Length: 484
Image (cartoon, rainbow, N blue to C red; front, side, top):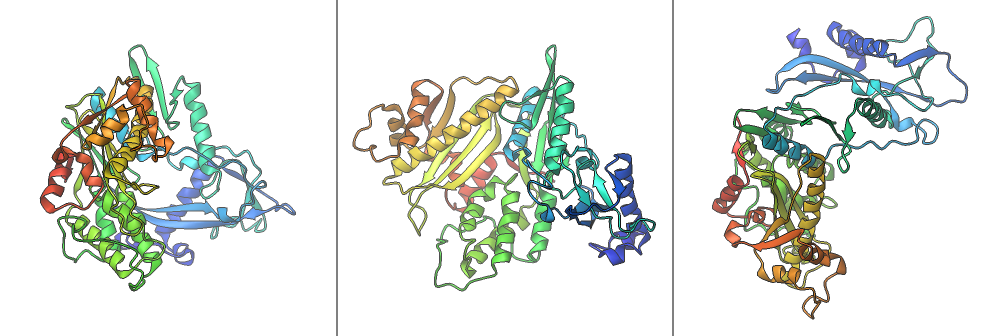
């Protein structure tokens, strides 16, 4: 059986003659019967019938050990016709930063998070449209080979499947006195006297490729399994390790005279790395910088991406630690690298945001316009940071945590002075008016900008490449530890 389990991604003609894969497919169809997903009916005339496909994979545990075969029947949703087979498809998805915020709330409230996994969740969502699908390959009814299945509930692969499941889950929770979050629509809260029960439209312990370990000291979040698989996927498991993701001497630009590389490979690397930034703020800047060259990647860009992966190889066990020794005060740090982009001389804004002692959100983004001074670049970065603070403040209200005046730390005194000066004098009249909303926040005591020395600026990690000592110091300061 072990040899069979290790067979990855079989084709349908291989799977239907393998007793273990046949058993996995039968388990999937048994789920359909129990959930009353469909009914076999004669093929209707002039109706679009959607194809079906088997998807095979090996399920693994947190350590990467294969535990069982998994077969899933999915609809070929790309053949659906809008207005006929589906209408609305939008379903809210939990933002990764809202998940990290939940972990920080758990530390503040000192409660344990539990996971509830709904098996074949989408099969519980009711369909509003009339949808027909072909019989699955290998399991065609011999007495009615030309019949099709009429769906009562959603099938994986249908464009409206996530919405159908979310609508049913929402209705159930609301009917049982849960209140949906005002900002985060994937959060549901139920109050009873002075206690409250949270339900988040997500998973815990091992979810979305992230591992959560809860201890007596706090909660650890990492993606070590995903990181190791990423390194192996791109064939760099035997490559040299690097202590930083990017060299301070590297000046990436479009490199128009450089040799082009495979765009699909480059974009695949970038996409995989971007997902890893969910728990790895230390690579946020370097991945974001390399992502700017996806339209026409060159050898110099690929070399930079491979260095990031080799850095990950040596640090795959790093993750974020959320300590119980914390509070509910929301603070932020903002910084900017003035004119750091070689091609267009635009600046890079960086920010990181804490609830108490725990890092919840971070960003590294090229600014939309060219700044004429370092003060302007820092001022724009502060404005972006304020919008994030306001969003987090509203989310915390759903958890009944109110914020007073929030503090944003900046290492540029001129930018701080601009935020406190209500008069648009000649030094600031060229700055886009939308950036000046920060003055209203300061004036109404919603946000206060405080100065701190550059050496203490944690957001420095998100604006530029740093030397080894500075990089490691900031990496430790933001709460990254080895979680293995």
